[in-house]
Image (cartoon, rainbow over all chains, first blue to last red; front, side, top):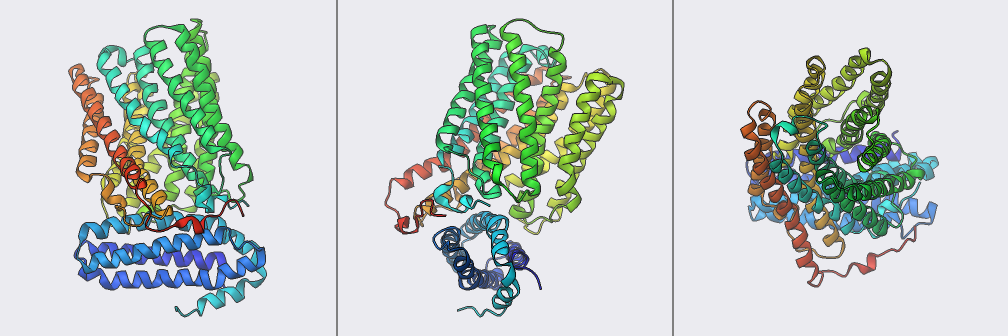
Length: 146
Length: 432
């Protein structure tokens, strides 16, 4: 079984790929990319919930850092969720400029967020939670989005 | 491991990187004006005072300013490291670099030793403050990624080129040109472009290309070895250049081949990128690959023509490669910084980063810059091209200033309004 770090990092890459597909399809028409956009938003929401409902609480419990990095990551999740709804709205309104403007903003925000998680938070989580790694990954794997 | 980079409260204030970014095009304009005021024949000699002044308005005024701004911003994100007292340190370094560079331009151009003396002190303080505070900030970094290795190697060369630069300026100020002067100047220029700028760009490309353009990742060999191999090549070149000049070419081929390989890899990665968006930043990456390829080969051929083409190599590698990529990155970084800081303060209804810079103006800026670079290259054969090319360059830098200033003005305007949300509930002050 993969480690927490590998599991969540791979999930980032999966989301990146669907994001790229969504943008590529949007090149033809916004309506045709609706399915990809919904899939992307759903995958991201799943990823956020794996962190917010499983990994972050485990990390906080182990390290006692409840107001630190995990809280900042939650805040960035909130920022991104707001962009998700703007992205879907742009499709509803068939507003090309708004869609690509939002997707570009989202892309950079997402990537620098991923960078921080992958290079710092996940590495640290793996260090602190290595003994429980399999259990945590299994829990994240079986999570059902609320 | 420090996690300070994960907190927006601890990210550098927006003014720290922006100050560097907004000043860079101004020095670009100064460089263009200096070219206009120079004679084309003197610019063809790399060691003429006119050439030195123009080169440094660009290499320090644009390259070093953008690199220091970007490093200040990227350290928390890429390395989880933070410069201590970042506001004061970057402001001090910025002032020293700006005043030092202006003094250098005036001191050398008008032969005023007091200005040149101030220049080496100011530039020395500015460079060393930035280099040493970044290195100090990185002392606790455990996860040395390929990008961080690129940064460290780049700073290693920066330390030496700054020291050599101080020595060279000191000699100009005291009018005591020693026998080592031109040897040092040669090493200074090669290490500056390929070491300081080149290695930082390569290191950042490892991260930026896959992330922003969803291009395939660089191979492990590239990420693990290339920075070390180029750095070694540069050190070996130094030894050969100083002591065994007849073998110098081997080291040059070594360095040029790696840079050419990098240029080709970037081109191929863009071909295979999964994100089909093509904007002016992609154009900049593409053209920089072409210019770097031409520049690397010409640097080798130049060896067989008594260094006749070295200024052309400078235009291709410095202007075509380094400058192009840096401007491309500015177009991404500045709007994002504005968006990120506003959003973190609770402003939700703000323009997206695509709406902050006029795409048409960015394309005109790109076209003018490329035309000016091509003009500078051909001015080697047709001196009449120099003046119009300089004018294109100045307008292109003026547009660049306007383009990067627009998002900042949007930031100032929006900040005067009340935020949509009160984000202070999220505020954490150094509790981690």
